[in-house]
Length: 223
Image 1 (cartoon, rainbow, N blue to C red):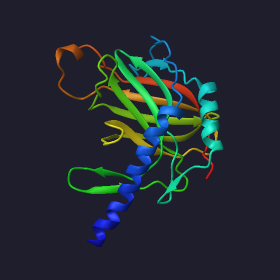
Image 2: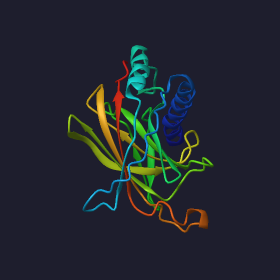
Image 3: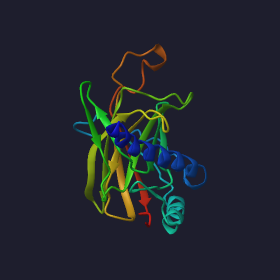
């Protein structure tokens, strides 16, 4: 019974923070404007279409400054931040949206065992990449996403986004991100084709890896 209580505590805290962030998103998030597709192809490994995704960074900066100005709420040692839309665009009818939210513990399950990943004091936010059908808003599963973040040309994060399910945020591709404080960052998302059988409406789309590049501003919340 004690073990169950210990396990439930961080999950309850995570649920509270997620619910709070979802509520805050209605008033505090800053949606980015979509950029027009770029039909250029990258060379070498790519068959990879390049596309820039505008972040509306000036608007985002104002929103995040307001977030940073307010004293952040802490639950069970986790600092809550309002969910923020960093950027969004559409590729062949797939909407790609990058969002930042409070970093909370998550569990990786490989089919036989679980590994719990907990945010550290250096963790800045939880990056969620939402892939969905732009026409129906239905999530696109079975793809893979790799995120690379740079600051002044230097890579500060370069890892996969885990396929995730969540009662509060829905299916997405996520990971905890650590960046070296407030500032402007460049993010590149490599979206690989969904590996699955397809109905005919998706027969001729999302067949090659696709890269999305954008700039966003991050303000570290004050505790």
